[in-house]
Length: 640
Image 1 (spheres, rainbow, N blue to C red):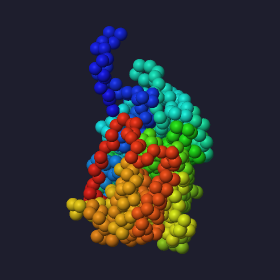
Image 2: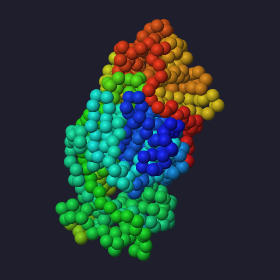
Image 3: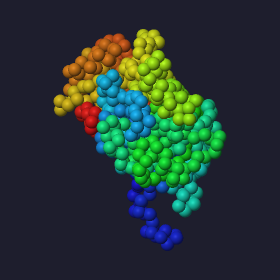
Image 4: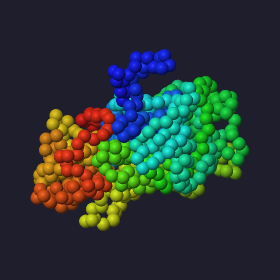
């Protein structure tokens, strides 16, 4: 947030120019220009900047680029990512910009948009068999929001809440010591090199991360193991797709397939007039021919319209990576997003995982800056997110390989494998029946990419910031853990969504009454001892929610069905919505509840033992005040 220049500053500087009207960075009494420096303003950097500014932390976020992403890139926004936006008060804004859920998922596998369909798959939870699972699992539906539309929403929120944003600003280097980090930048417009002193540095600087390289974070896997051409174009294809809406259309065509996917792709950017055409290429043969004549011919082939006149917007190549960092931080420097997990867009996990990295880290940094937590809390970031990064890199790459079964009917001995294969596939013969049976088996396997509710919502954290419930054994998974959400209040899991009713009679989620930058003590009407214990502790970062009291009543009984603890038991829910601690027994005594609650908070937050008493802690040394966030008080409709 800009700081007015003191009145005693000379009206004219030594160089003859007027003194600055505002100083965007005002050095505090400890010598810090800002609390946090963020490098990178993609989805991860944007979430981190927005969250930190919302929590009242001074933050400077910089990018080497002049504005937001110049191409669609990431687009699938899964339920967990939308929940992050909801917590930050941005869900409705994002929904206004996005392709709605009901237009995302009638996914075709066809010979062209005008050609013969082979199979379809209802994807992203939109189908008859999975629709209810997705509605039950979250107050938010999925969205399709391309990165150039997502990023301005985040940057507007970050700036309006006090973050300082710098474009055309190149990160060069940093040095760190026990107290902070000195970051070196270069102004891309003037070439001027300057430094900033911050308490923490967050590196969300992409798959070619300079910060990851400088920290020498350990990386496992390989880069550029396959290549893909992407052509962004405009053409009105409404007549071909409006009656079967989807974000992705997969094309079986002998002239458009290469590599492990082996199909061409038409991806809707703005239904139904802006698109990406994609196809693999042989890296051993060098870069493919992307002349206008070549790409227009390829687009016509994928669409199936020889007279189509597409307007070519951009041409690009990208490469399939399979690499992840095993550790995300070093000292006071933390990395996330594509910098630490590098993978193809299959399964739609990239920006979603990156946003969750940032959301996990932001509250921990804020608690450290404000003095609420010790260094152990920040160490939990890598312990929690690195296993997730490893998992999604493997899943995204496996999703590409799982297309092989969909092509088994190709006749590779023919000059036109697709046309010849179709004849066999449709034949009323034993061979045809076997091919059709195998095709449906392969289609079912693709649910692990396109209806992977568990991959998106079943993440479990194990770290010092999660205290295990010793009354429980190992978690059992009666259903496929990648396909189906298993909602639970076990520590380390995301708080289950359940509809409650607010004071105005409207539905609100359990996710709406928790989070917002605070720890939440969650109990029931019988948990009066817990409520009194929290009041006795008077902690500025802890709020109490009693399910059953006005503002959070449970008339449907949905919370009672999923809470897994007695009404007089308790949960501690972290600001990121994950359960930090659970007491799975009734407590009636205030002193017992106070001891249990304070002990749990001390362990989760790594709070120092020699901290002053609650009434003597004084004002925290951070510069801005937190921003109140309003979330929707009703369930968004699937067609919103």
